[in-house]
Structures are given as C-alpha cells and as structure tokens.
Length: 234
Image 1 (tube, one colour):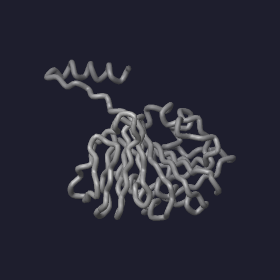
Image 2 (spheres, helix red, strand yellow):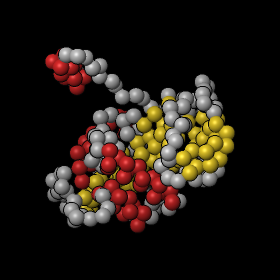
Image 3 (cartoon, one colour):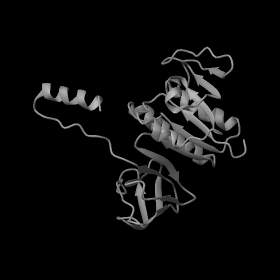
Image 4 (tube, rainbow, N blue to C red):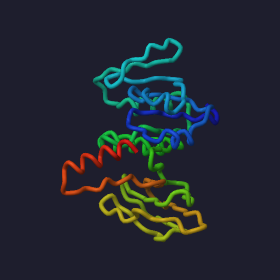
C-alpha cells in the first residue's frame, strides 16, 4: 500500500479525541472494529473498512462502506482480525487507538499485537489518552521532552544490551527480564532527546504524555460520591 498507514480503531474508551486526532492523517486507511464505531464523530474519521461480530454495537447499514461480519465464536478478537486484514492488504505501518484501558484482558491482548507486528517487520504504535506505545527491537527509539515520563517494559523473553541515554536514570548494557521490571518511570533530561536501544530481544516502550487525574478518597462515602460526580463534570 505504499506509504499509506493502516489505522485501527477499537471500542475502548477515548476521552481526549483532540489528542488522538493529532496522530491521524486524512490519507490514512481506517479500519473500525465493532464498538469502535462510536468514535467516528469524535475522531472525524470515515471508515474504509468495518469489521466485527457486532456483539457490542449495532451492525451499521451503510452499503457504501465495506463491512466484514465475523462469527461471535472465534479465536481472533475483532482487533486482531483487523490487524491481520491490514497485513493481508499489504500495509507496513499501523496505528491503533481505542484498544487499551477498561478491561485489562483486552488491553494486554492488544498490546501483544505490537509484538506480532514487530515479528512481521512492520511499524506499529498504540496511542491512548495518556501515552503511546511501541516495540523497541532492532532499531533504537527516541523520546522528546513532550513526554514527561517513559518506561521500558519486558513483555517477551529476556532483553540484553539495553541502553538508555539522555535520561535521568541512564543504563548501559543492561538486562531486563519479565520477572524484574526496573526501567519504569524514567525522565528525559532537560533540553535533550532520550535514546533507547536493545542489543538482543525486545522491549515495550511507553511514552507517557500526562498522568491520570487522581480522585481524593476520604472517609466519608457521601463526600466521595459528591467528589466523583464533580470529577465527571469537569
């Protein structure tokens, strides 16, 4: 598909549509998955392809848009099927949104899609309201000052020869296993661009753009409920 990018929109919550729209381009190829269709208006994007078993969203009646209806009993989630369909259609660059948060099982399954695409030699990122994620393997990755924090997590095997430069907590020729995650919540040095690389294996890089708002918990349940309502109305 040349330089065209495949953007996959899932059904997880997106609160900051403006933030996600910053990643989108009118030339992108959009695949909306089932409940992801609720984000159409907020993202201002028109589906090129719709896939799903439509167990969480009514099947659209739009004859002008290609739609693939999936069985409800299947091995692949709607998001995984959409990625495989993007691969079948020849895309080399993927962006996924609306695929993290709320249900941890779906979040972890969707993060593993990054491993699948890295194995296939494709570029891929997941973006949400607070962060962006990608796999660091054969090529280094960079983090600029627009991200207050970043973390390197091992979600596959053992990573060796890990280097982190221009960061508050530098690392040289380190080893990170799945059992011991110590490269969490690092910071870019002022005026610098952090660089991370992996000699052997691969790591999940999470660039954190902002932190979630914390609701203060008191010993008064009625006050807590009132505060929660205030938070929702902000």
